[in-house]
Length: 430
Image (cartoon, rainbow, N blue to C red; front, side):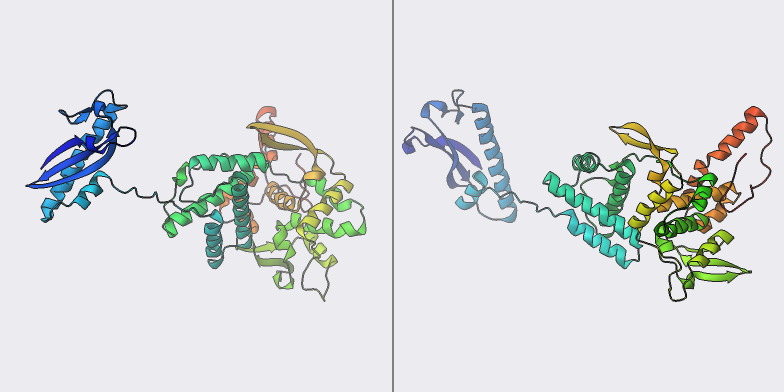
């Protein structure tokens, strides 16, 4: 095969430019085709069959001629290998291929994927609370799509887009560090489901998605606080809220569990009573001994015509009333409210009554139980924790143990020889 480039000066256009043709000889056959380039006769070197230096971007143009020669040679070899003859149509396709339109990849909103994920979780029996906070995470991502004007398609999700999402959650939504960390935990679980169970090729490695959480101090009430609540005088409409909160302090129940208590959960045990139930969050079965104080509250609200054991209001109402209850009980001491802003720790003194919620009762039960000498393994069963590491968090925040040890080491006082005894959840540490 022999190739030549010739300038067709007989076909000048109005600007005086002549087209460049390639002439190819295949075993006696001759094919000729324009390559799509034009130049003035003065810019063409007929002897060397290439553009002169006077031609704009001559080096690039001459490289094109060399590439076309190589492409035609490869085309001819492929034809010869299968025994086919070269044609003018084939030569044109090699010299001036039709541009293939770039395929546009249609992205899909994360809502489509995430809704399928939540349906899968529902079918597998995940708890309502788990489904709820996954829905919250899904809604945050939808709001980000509207705010940023981009789609969070898992196939194109990358670290740059991830950082924009984190900035949105922190700066625009003003979420706390732990709320952002929870959203990130949900996001990573969702991406693993797509990768491992649906075979979706993700746009980034899940292990590269990292974020720092924040160890928020857990608020709990001490013995003096509980005594104030028990003895405080308050309006009749707030008394049930106070009593139900104290009942949770004596049993460690979450709001979702105490709200669902009914007569079927109440059982006799060795002359006393116990609650047997399944925790709504962890689906763990628990058996909780009812102390005299807890039983007295149940007896106070006993109603044979009502299946529910206690008159529990909606959670938001309970928390609203509870702040008034704590204020009337005199829980006005300053609590240390710790947060982060711009990467810095921000501390503020806030009245304890403003921070108490129904979940504070669970923290109070856990810390008071440890102070009374309850083994961590037993506390784990009562609280319904699946992992003992979760229960150990409460052991870390019981500062009295640390203070007792330091007093013994530095001041020579003897260590406590056993659990402190006294009224239920009314532990005084000397």
